[in-house]
Length: 113
Image 1 (cartoon, rainbow, N blue to C red):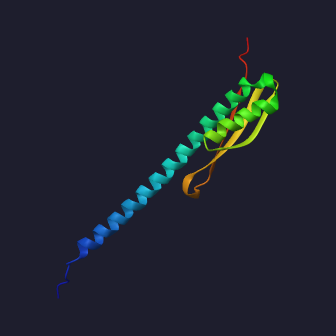
Image 2 (tube, one colour):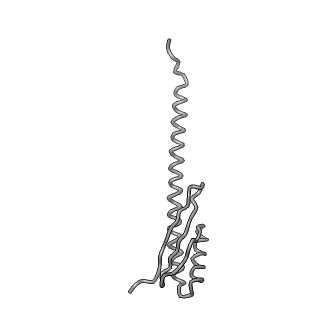
Image 3 (cartoon, rainbow, N blue to C red):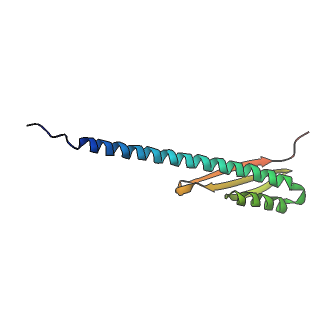
């Protein structure tokens, strides 16, 4: 008795498409996490530079400027402090889809001469 193979290509095609969609979703999720990490690092760098640029106006004013920068970049300012004239900033950004939180630290200050 011979088996009928009609329709088996449809099953294999559906399986291959499902596997391709899973791989595409994983690549998209990984890309989102990487972009979020870069966004957090960029925001931390800019916030530290902004705070260092206002260090002569006091810590409150400098950290307020850092907060304004991170708010514009849609990340959270976790901490802003100074060691001597160096501004140290920590920020966090949420990855889309609840894939986690990216954090970044940055330091900026005057150039040593």
